[in-house]
Length: 231
Image (cartoon, rainbow, N blue to C red; front, side, top):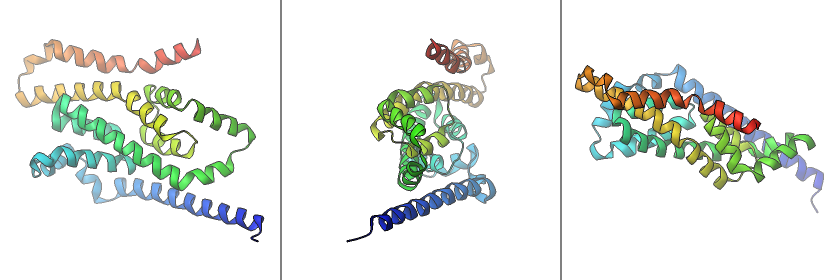
């Protein structure tokens, strides 16, 4: 009969190996994006030239690029801005949201697969209570953190280390990023339309004022939520 102590040590060893793989993946992703020629392709001009060659497949390609970019720690604001600049306010919103959801799901499963066992082994009695509370209130916790603009990619991987259920994480993320994504893509997309048209008189239009108001108003969402939560 196998020695239980040996099995425990084996599980810990596997958890450590997977955690090292996760750390190597994160470090490699950050270095690849910031220190290799890959960064030269993450501009509106380069990406637009590439997507222009794909015709009807351009939106699907962008969604895939966005999802991969999230997993590789490409800043989500950069990807969102590129989507709005290339596809406009409304098309950009749809493709960015889908890409963000796919990327967030992928990063969650990477964190869950490679880091959850190691993280669970480090959790003491006190932290265990918080971990269990996150599992019980997963949807509300994820929704709140998304609405207060908690850093997107770190949260994707970090939630994978907790015991939150994927369905709570998925729906909390989907609803939580909806407003911010629309506001940002609407703002960038509106400015892009004016730039392309050359009709600078539209800067005084109601659409621009609405875009600016939504963009500035979005920064007050975290403040309002924190005040409401404090009550």
